[in-house]
Length: 110
Image (tube, rainbow, N blue to C red; front, side, top):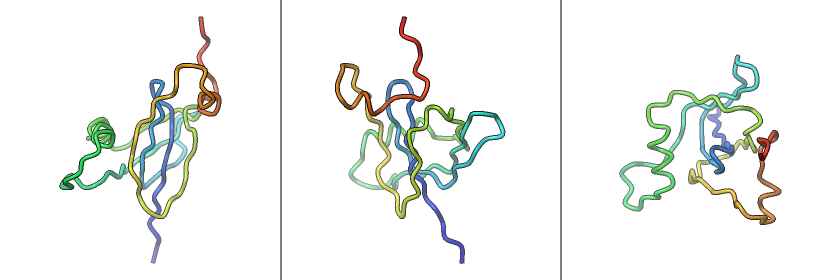
């Protein structure tokens, strides 16, 4: 009996950290990209609605798979069960968290 894996993928997108849950993660045939597919979100019928998860659900609605540049990936974790998908803003000021969350190749500041 094969075990079904769930992956939590954290990546940077437009100065925000996206944390999504997917069933499949692998290297793309296109050099420098990681493919994430089969996004997992909470049940639509739940009474308590998380607006962040709803934003992610609508953003990835109809997406079969997403190609994410390797240098935007922060981490990929194999987890036992799904958590809450979320978007976290990266602090714009010189906060200490900014040093821990950055792309591998940040754009040049001009």
